[in-house]
Image (cartoon, rainbow, N blue to C red):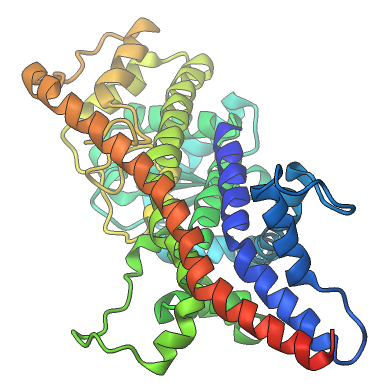
Length: 440
């Protein structure tokens, strides 16, 4: 709920910052329509509202003047409608292609009918599902030496994906315990939660790419499948990867030439919204959304461990499995950071180094929790903590957080200032010209 509330707040903020551009386009279209049918002066009325808002004591409230809450709601409306339309289109595409995209990204395959170990794994999944009182999920394999497993979907679409390395490295009891943990996670609704979390990540990426699209050809190409006439099956995977990892799209360089082309001049009115995509959304996502999602997923994985113990009655097996994996490779060579929430163990490598944002509890923490439930396994040694280093770094970290907060604050005002300079002046001049030519 907190993550969703953060996304809603961020969406409303972005919609307000997009309001000048949206109303400039709408207002000029109304001015053009005024040549055919008398139309209200939308831009002029908006300017009077802003003038009254900034100078409430200079002029008495005139008839038709709106209060601040209603004015802000109307200002955010076009941006909300635009984002809602894009998000609805994205949701339909994701629902229609989610299995194919994930399978392509992870390299999933069905089990080999002639492989005895894979057949036994399928039997273990059916046994654990029966013990957990839920339908048996599908089994998919990942041909990798890494030791990991993932859960996908929910209900009839639920799937457990197991790496071949995990199947080869663990004994039957340890494999059964990990399968029970995956079944428990599905029973707790983590498969459906992972999809909802993925949507939150994607809408953050959508905000970034939409803001960058006017001046970034790569961002425009990635968003092309949102348009019905540019839609293609291979473009859906590119779109979802772009939304899950929008930082992979760098701002275009001009090759060292500082001269502005005519295209650059035409894009000048859009530079205000560009601050949204390169400062406001990325900083907010990294400092607020990522740590919040990390906390949620660490708790969900610990809950799945405890739930697995409830129906397997074997905390020892799961604790031994985690101890066996303490020195085993768990990372996969996938370029899909937006899929990390699907896996039970660290799949990208390095994500556990920054604990505040990591979606994975440490294996030591998981074993200690299982020991409290009856297991007797020595956990791996805790990572050494350099107290002096943390004492020295704490002021720097606090300063960094403060600096990032100021960056978002200043980025908001820079966005407004750029809109007033590069958008307000030409739109105001064109508005007056069109109204003058129309005779009103």
